[in-house]
Length: 146
Image (cartoon, helix red, strand yellow):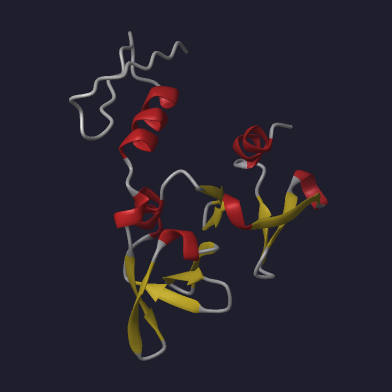
């Protein structure tokens, strides 16, 4: 991919244009990354009997459990009425699906090790653990550069 940056003193904020012959995954992901504004993004989640405001970077993992989406923070657990794919669309590029039911914050990964049946075990900085399924393993390895 070719990249060109032009300085224009009359612009107050960056403006990006993508020229392409076709729209594929790479172009779609690039457009999403350029367009996302995570500092303004937040979730209103249920914690016990109250609702709290949580920023995406405070979420370590989101998982579909017992007919609801459960989100894990540093030491907190939240629930959401949103579906997992809706949360995935709002979380941004720091999150990756590692199984049909789980999303993880890539910046909160502590370690990864090989496991049974061609999967990998993932440990998060908050102590949370999960397995990366074989279907989602290629994208995860691409992220790690292995």
